[in-house]
Amino acid sequence: MERGAPGQRERVAAAPGQLGAGLAAPGAPPPLGRGRGRTAARRDPGADGAARGPDEPAPMGGRGRGGRPGADPQEGGQVGQAARRRRSPERYEDNAATMDAFPDELLLEVLGRIDNDALTLLDVVPLVCKRWHRLSRDPGAWSSVTVSIVGCSYFGGRGNGKRHVYHHDEMLEAARILLHAPALRRVCFEGYGGAFSCPNDAEAMASALVRSRAEVREIEFPQPHIPDYIWYPSDPLDDMSPEDLSQLVDFLWRNRSHVRYLKLGQMLRAGEPVLRALGQCENLEELHLMLPDPNYFRYQGQLGGRRLPKLRRLTLNSWYNVDGYRAFLEDLVGCVAQSVRHVRCEESCESSEDVLSQLSRCVELRSLHCGLALVASARTQTKLRSLSLGIYDKDPYEDPRISFPYGEKDQQGVWSAAERALRACGELQALQELRLDIDDCYGHDSQALAMLLATVLATLATKATNVRHLSHSGMLNRQLCWSGTMLGFFKALPRLESLHIDYFRFDCLPDLAEVAGLKRVSGQVTYRKGEADVCRDALEQFKRARPEVDCQLTEHESLY
Image 1 (cartoon, rainbow, N blue to C red):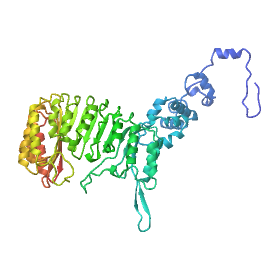
Image 2: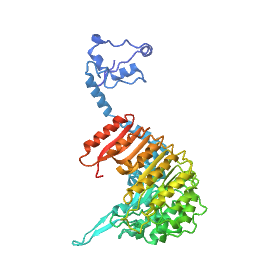
Image 3: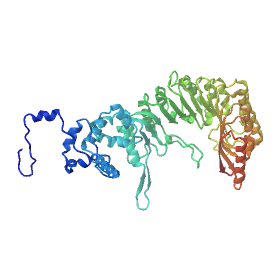
Image 4: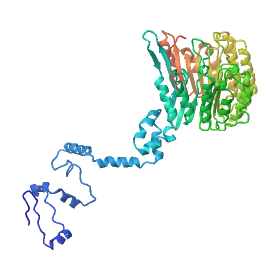
């Protein structure tokens, strides 16, 4: 045995034959229990490792279930938690290595879910590392980003001379995003203020639109509206110069091969350039357009012979008389007749004979929304599954310069013609869903119109015998119920299972309980002030009379 300096461990020199013997025959195991000496628990930790072997992990928190002999199990759990908190830097390096091992496609999928946060993609993601900087410029990382372009406004200037600016920073951020983004899900030009309404930085947005090379899948141009206080269309395009309109059309032209969704508003007033761009959008899947005042539109056959083979949804809308759009509608429907599945006609397009004459060419229609005057167009739609009918009246207080579906004088004539056309058409075998959008159209001659409407609906019931789901929007008043107009229609549908009514009086519930075959009823039951208890009792009686019906009716106080 050799002794070293004080404080150093003693080294024992083994005899030449003892080294091999020690490897061949392991020593006796240490004594256990009371036979174990005090020094057994303070052995060299390397001895335990040698006894276990290289592949057996060491127990966390010492030996035994509690961490050491006789220790409290709860205390041992705390020791284990402390050990887990003391993780080595190598553990974090392993996590980073795993993240770096992700393929580019998976990282782009993650980055593409940063909804509407273009500034993060511009200012934060590129700073992570070189790889993320490269991926931040990939179009896949921008697949869910939407940009809203709102013109800024200045107010004030009196008294202290200060002027207040609104939406100026938002406009500059939108211009920056347009300039640097490789791709965008949607660009929305807000109506109020316009895209070029900033008096201080008028060129900022214009320059960004011209220089932008983003691949945009959805574009929404400024939409007109009718303010309540003037009752006349207000179009943001009125405040734009021809140069501004040209820049919007050029933006659409550059994205003609990328755009899938297009909401044009009244951009047709831009003339030939926008029609030429529209005819080139061969990947377009959904189109919404408003036909402008005919005084702003001249059509010269720009869409003739063009095809939009992927278009599935088409919405036609106008606040003006559309009689002068026959040639345009003929070419537009020719572009989409073989592919369109869903058509929605609104406002004056609901009752236009020009629109009616073209709908019969759309042989693949699955759903249609139109006015009652166009219901006969469904007779050629053998694949039509959903039909929505708008039944409206001209409001006598509306501005006479705006065209509405029909006036009071010819309303009865329109409905009578629709009933005759329905009587002549065949059964709509594929129709399963029906929606009635009925406005308050009984103010002038309620009795006559209610009887005429009952006749039209009775004829419709003979053609729509496979309808299973019926929805009624608006208020179902007592006159419609008591006259048998609507309840008679409900009872005439032999396969009706689901019925939704937006609002109806509680005293219609007894008649509603007589509709056979119903499995589900939903909507709001209305009552006047002081009638809450009576309404509640009527609803309970309906549930007792029809226990098999899934009743989703709620109570609502109303003035009517």
